[in-house]
Amino acid sequence: MGKIILDGNVVAQEIRDGLKTRIEVLKNIGIIPCLATILVGDNPASETYVKMKGNACKRLGINSIRVHLPEETSTSELVETIIELNIDNSVHGILLQHPVPTHIDERAAFEAIDIRKDVDGVTSSGYGQTALGFGEYPSCTPAAIMKILEYYKILIDGKHAVVVGRSPILGKPVSALLLNANATVTTCHSKTSNLSEILKQADIVVAAVGKPEFIKGSWLKQGSIVLDAGYNKGNVGDVDYNSCYEVAGAITPVPGGVGPVTIATLMKHTVESAEKFYV
Ligand code: NAP
Image 1 (cartoon, rainbow, N blue to C red):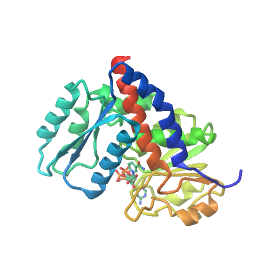
Image 2 (cartoon, rainbow, N blue to C red):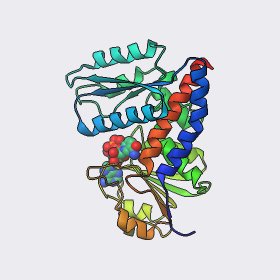
Image 3 (cartoon, helix red, strand yellow):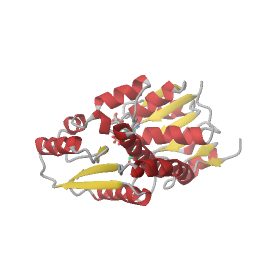
Image 4 (cartoon, helix red, strand yellow):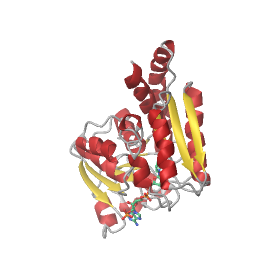
């Protein structure tokens, strides 16, 4: 296999194309899918992500509601807002932008989201369903990574996948999805002592570390498949692209890799949720 750039924009376009007719069908019965995003505080990166999600809705002709709460919002006020969106019949998906300010119990807020509207798989039920292999809406970034592998027909069965990161919305669910797809999965984290040795054995590498250009090409096996979920200041991922590009058989760029597929997946989950409510 020659070197492949795993182009997220192409994969995202395919997902969006598949949604157009479904959105039309819903519109014909008077339903416009709607995603509600909740942002707490003024984290500029989070503001950008929320704006990108709203713009993606607009481009597809679906509705979005943007709830922006002040930094000093309490856990119970945030939960209250989520409950209002749960009972609002015009809302089909709820996305609470992570991270919330540290004084808020983020887990309690996530758990308040109605499972039927949990389009980013953040509730414990959503995560549990994903892990058991029957989840309606796995977290969007893990689902996007699986979609990229599927689109490029990359064999997962029997391969050794190494996930670097174990966060509840990324590392853990993508490990579960890869395991369910018959990979042999190793999940690494900040206490992993021999990361580069483990990565040397990886056929598939998922970088979900949150550290710019952290994974180096010299740590990888020749020909490995590298999926970089990272998105850091300066538009760089969690892998050192230049050195990893030299060694990898296929690699996602940043930007233009996992990011656009994540947003398209969020749109897909929102449309699916609208369909489940009404069709
Ligand atoms: P996170 O919650 O900060 O988790 C980072 C994980 O990396 C943790 O499990 C941590 O281990 C592990 N880690 C930290 N330092 C390490 C080290 N030296 N060696 C091995 N593991 C280490 O981050 P996240 O929310 O999962 O996000 C990860 C990245 O993905 C970020 O760059 C974020 O911007 C990006 N992201 C992208 C998208 C997208 O659409 N592309 C969506 C969400 C997030 P411990 O558990 O031991 O602390």
